[in-house]
Image 1: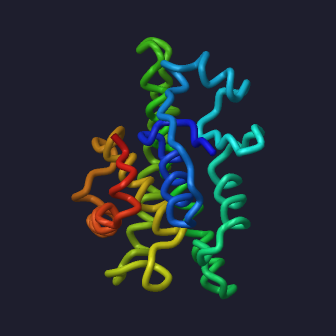
Image 2: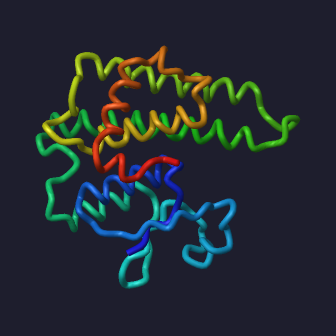
Length: 202
């Protein structure tokens, strides 16, 4: 099994960490959708990362769907809580984290446009959305000094830490550690976990 994509992508990295936590073996191929477009296109004509190439030669795309597939095949505990209330909260927090990733990615792509083609008003809106999502997570982490749902990290922990780490690679001028200290501290703790440390973003 092969996971295609670079770990500086929050979607690829959350997928890779989740697969590792679930005990799903895979080979990571660090291919860029920009620099290695043709090579990825031969694997997945849609040229999307992450792409998980299965043992039968078929492939899956989209981090949420790949992780769902992995959950169904893992013998390890699920990364989502089992109780209804905790699962609802975990889904809510994971959704916020994915929004952080999405808005940071939008800032990156807007920056790739020629300066005279950039939409300043739209970019200001995206920055505001990124700050809002980080602010929501900052409040949710008040009083949290370990993992969110038990003694080991779950999907909400993974998604939050990976998303924050990505913002610090590409948008630290928009969301600084000083403005979101709980989020920064939570993510720093997560990065010390062996499954995070084994799959660094750079």
